[in-house]
Image (cartoon, rainbow, N blue to C red; front, side, top):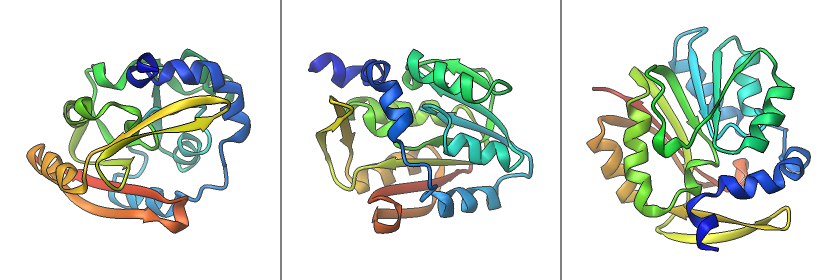
Length: 201
């Protein structure tokens, strides 16, 4: 199971079709997406890291007039995303090693960042920062307390990990982010713990 702990995208290669069929599309995340949209420039650039099939989050930004780019480390998920959106740029890459030589108005890492091992999350937040324009917004989800867990999805175990709230606050502050939204276990958003922070170098 250790291999799946380090590279969760390998599990998504196995369950891609199941995920595409079972991922909720009713956009319970909408209030957070709309708040982000209210902050960044109209028709700005959005990088969706761990974009999966592109539905529903990337689709929502695309339909709202933003220039979207999708990144995922799973070949299977990207193959489905490319079928869904033939006119969108999708990049096969591990978020931990991302070097696009471009900066964006917003980065989304919704239900993807929390698949990384604890020890790799601080440096990955620095990777995100390097891909944001000044004033850009980062939106990601985590757990509500320090720890690791496994969840069964499509018959496969998926690894999840989270730092403690104070640790995320400290790391974001270190990387010059101002936290503008933090909601723990939001009951209206599937129990997600949500972070939204603006990069202010």
